Image (tube, rainbow, N blue to C red; front, side, top):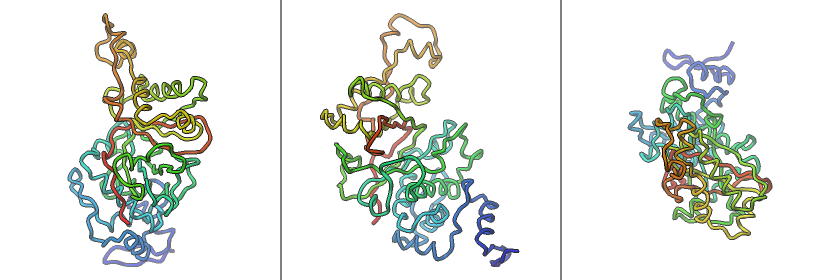
Length: 345
């Protein structure tokens, strides 16, 4: 039998394994076991972020709820975060509330996009975020638990639960957790947050909502132009849900590709121009694939082009991942914070 602590008429288990089961019963998990949020762990989390428990981190008018620091801290503890991760988690929650992010569309859409946390600045080293090998894979506590904490906030505080407010047809493993850091070391360009007008010494969080992630393979036989052609093709594949929304894209270059681009003196703007040019699809091709209501191919349709993005500036370029390999990754972005938030020290 487990020991219980009584609060009014509610019996809360003291034994850790029973507490975990209690969280399952209450629907507070993401399907995986959570860490029980003890008072001491909660206190440490709030102190590390410099927050009062009743301090409002974000107002969410679309959900008619205010998310307090205490709620964020509880979910961060349950996700397995260290206290030092709290500034990043809190900043990501703040980004959810920005009207430009379109939270309800992102969290409830049939296409099942997921918020992706991108971290820049000195805090990467301070808390041990991974920006290199196995970037999107398991093994790094900071990446895994920070991303998971945001997912728990979405479910426990904002009530985006599968089959209820989260109506994704398939979803994605990224909905469990998706948090990465950009690699400033060896980066041939300005990092994302510096490109947005912030300082290298600023620690920032950028939140993007992505429908899918794809890894491309290109050994460079066609040179850099062939590589960028492949990226453009992936951003505009004929069955893409986003091709008609002309929404932004994000490309992550790592490994040998970063070196090729660096050696060739390619700027980010030059890369954007070539990639977006290669996202074009003819109206005839779209009709043949059944992507347009009108399917009759008319004169001029073969030479009339549709681009996956309105402007080259809508392509986000990051540097991260392993130092070796021939595969950049791309995300089809449904939405993006236009300006990163500076993480609280």
